[in-house]
Amino acid sequence: MDSSMVPPAGSPPGGVTPNYVNPPTLEDVTIGIGVLMIVLTALVVSARLYTNFFLSRSPGIEDYSCISAVVFLYTYVGLVFYLNRTARHIWDLPSTWLDAAFFKQRFARDMFISPATFFSKATIFLLYLRLFRPTKWFRYSIYVLMTSMIAVYGAYIIVNAALCAPAPGQSWSYPGVLAKCQKQEIYTEIQGTFNVIIDILALTLPMPIIRRMSLPMSKKIGILAIFGTGFIALICSILSLAYRAKLFGTEDWSWIGAENYITIIVEVGITIICSCAPALFTLGKHLFRNSSLFATFRSHTTVTHRKYPSGRHTIPTPTSSSRYSSNTLVRPQQSNHKRRSEGIGYVELGEVMSDTDRKITGAAFGFDLDGNRPPPVRKDPTGILRTTDVEIISWKKGDEDGEETEERR
Image (cartoon, rainbow, N blue to C red; front, side, top):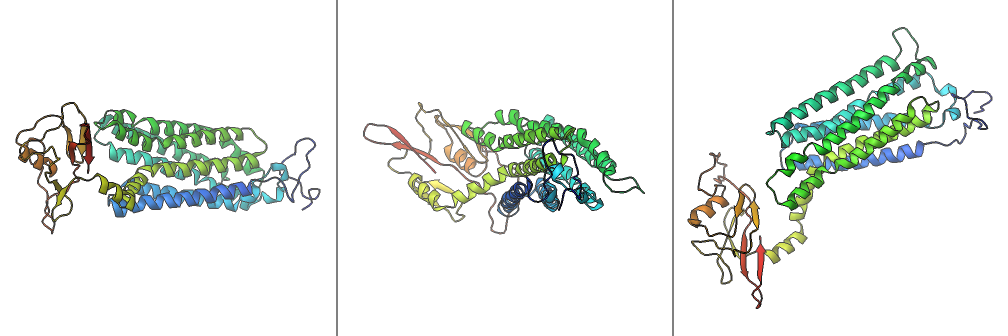
């Protein structure tokens, strides 16, 4: 195409000649990053759905929100690819490409930004609401944030429809639609700033609750690391805001706009991936526990035990080296560690417990240490009332120097 016959969509800088044949372009970068985000989110979300629907069998509304985010993101990426040929400098863009069809497709593409962003971030807050619902101040904080998100992202859809679509009876033709649509740039920056604030709150809001949890420090660090993946999403939001700011008042809107679309794809994709971190941790833990590596490790660290028909519970069998007895549980007083079994709570080891038969058996099968029964549970067809995972600790004398070693199962 000859630039002397078809004028460019914008004036080039001094000394620059329009190039319609092989100009600098962001097409390859856009396709590469878009495909990468599609592949990564597909793998991560598939793992999340498998974990929550089939492994733990505890799906929640946040899983459906995550699915919605993926659908809107993929639709947005598809429309970006469809208009990818305009990802070049405005002076390398033939004005004939900016026809009514282009502005209709551009309008449709931009309508998917807000839904994709909303559902990706709502997935995180809905998960928080499920995990920390009993905490009143936290629950109401989530309600306020979700309401604010609906207002801000919904307003962007209204603004985009009001400014980037012609009034009834008017034409989609260039340059009238473009001049009107560029007025939304300031609201684009407002939404970018709001995204950063939301990501900061998503990162910091659960921290006070996690710090007050009665958990060993190692488990607290693990939980903080899982939720801390939101820091990556925060970095992407800040980067996206920086590129949104470049759009304000620029003449080279086609090039800067392409950069902005790339950062939006990365921001939404990374947010979706971060929202799946807890499910990925659960899946990884399940796969490790069922791996040969874990079986080998377990065989070297298991105490002597007797299996019962259910296959879920094991009761330690006293050995010559064991410090257990039939009536008391003794642990050396100099060790004041705490151990927790799932569903039991903390038990101070390092003291002599009376009524051991009643208390230890009750704790192992879900009773508290005072022998109180849990609320009645419905029997299943096998007749098993309750199952729980029990951590058994035994202490025995080690080498000849008298050092104590710990065996755990």
